Image 1 (cartoon, one colour):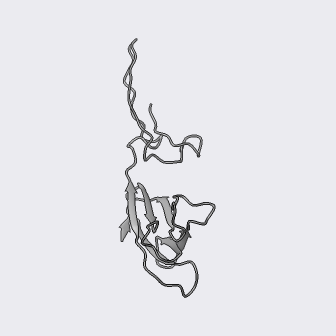
Image 2 (cartoon, one colour):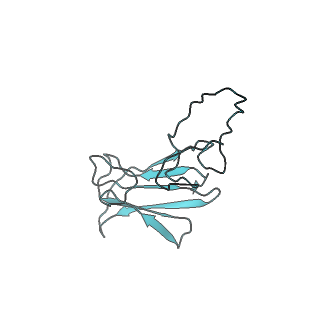
Image 3 (cartoon, helix red, strand yellow):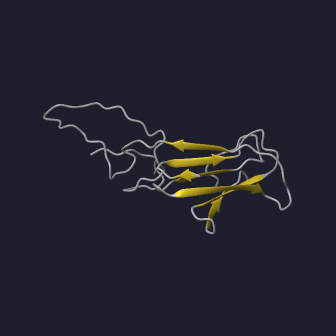
Length: 137
């Protein structure tokens, strides 16, 4: 099982070993199907370059939630082999405005700090929801 950590999870069948057109279904309860995204979908979260059989799904997990992943063919009765990859993006500690990186007191001077938005979230919970940001205070 895949247990949420609060970080972003990506599951994918975007491999050259995937022989059939696949779809991914993710649920946090065995009866309640949440969503699926395949490579031909206009709202996909992760590209499957050069593999129209692959599918991918990306979401921000909830801490402690167990997720179940189902892989199937996009067409009834189609069976074949696939490769499933699961990845966790570790979020920066200041990915949300509720946990900003403190800015040291200036006391008449200045400061310089390096940062990165790599693996941050595409949701600024205190502003533009399409921005990938990290927070400072």
